[in-house]
Length: 199
Ligand code: MN3
Image (cartoon, rainbow, N blue to C red; front, side, top):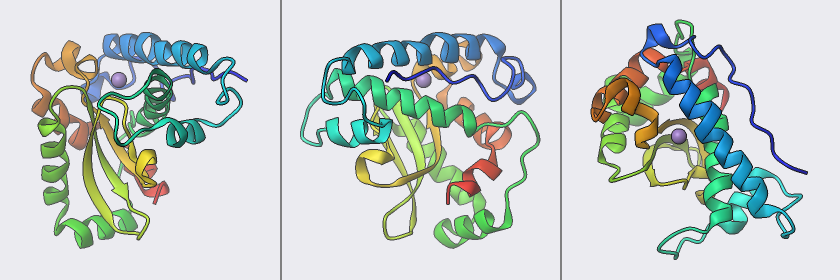
């Protein structure tokens, strides 16, 4: 079995009015995400991981004590991360469902405070990585940041929202301004219905 690159759930130019260009999606989905699929398939070929699910491979190859993760983990986790990322953005005007609004207010004090924490996590991730809203095993919500391809699956957490803060995610549209990219992501791009469906 080999993994496939999923189609974007919208056209390449569907997010232009929301601050993400077609050129970004052409590079980010068609080239970067596709490279994780190609290299991930190559890396697992002929290994014990060849017929396992993405989540099984991520959990089985993540090494909490390693200075740098291995090639199987890096490519497969990034494949999974991007599969989620496209679904977490919407070309429409996404309204936050009431249950999610209540959960964020209860956990962070206000929606604004949640957005501040999430943006600070993304801006504060030194080098490549991701920031997340996760649901922990005990049911509580938290904002986290991870380096490179590491993701909530590694920690048995549910990823409710994730933002890619690798430079390839924002350099075409925002150049070096990662905080502006994060602010735009939170205010114009998030598919809040998708976030709520993951709870
Ligand atoms: Mn990326």
